[in-house]
Length: 260
Image 1 (cartoon, rainbow, N blue to C red):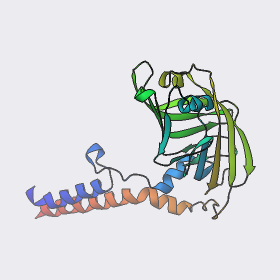
Image 2: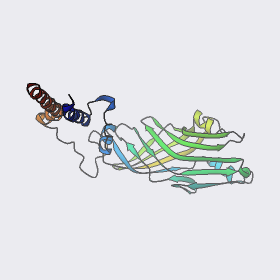
Image 3: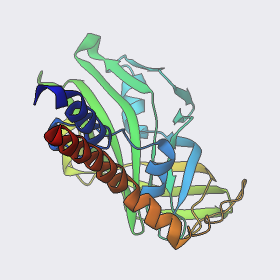
Image 4: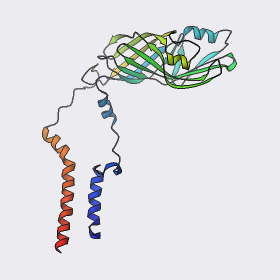
């Protein structure tokens, strides 16, 4: 049997290369970016987005006043233009037909005051959009006024209960009032859940929409023609034919050795 080990190894190698030896086989290649986009379903890529939000005007006035004697600073993609903080270069996906989507941003805003007793940072917003509203998700960190350290990621910070969509084609603007959530209160206990925060405006640039919905701008995004049934059959049976051929070679070699 020793003399047949090269053939057995070839058979095992062929099966391994085809991913047919179970968990011990080589790991399957990760899906390409194109296939991931295809699995998301109808909608459009958000190629650029801008989030404009003042956080809470009365809180900014408190930070900037004589009591807290504080300030705010921006970094990592966030900026400030009175009276709003601005996050740019957002990315995501949005379907104008269904109203579902998301846009995510990078950048931090840090509020400080009371000689360091107040020191809160909000970072990396994500707007999760649904037809009947949206939620603005934040990372929140820093000590509370009671001295408890808070480090909370992906907090659904404020609800946007009545999103209004304006614009058409590739350029849309989403606007809504914002209200502090229960999770927002836990991460930012200076205000109770249900407290009104500043309105939120998000401008979206859309492109590369799937043919099932949304804005079909830019490049042609017509669906590819369906493959011929023969092509499908070959694609499905091809690996099995290779395995069958390898098994046949091994069997033939065994019979020849047995007759020798």
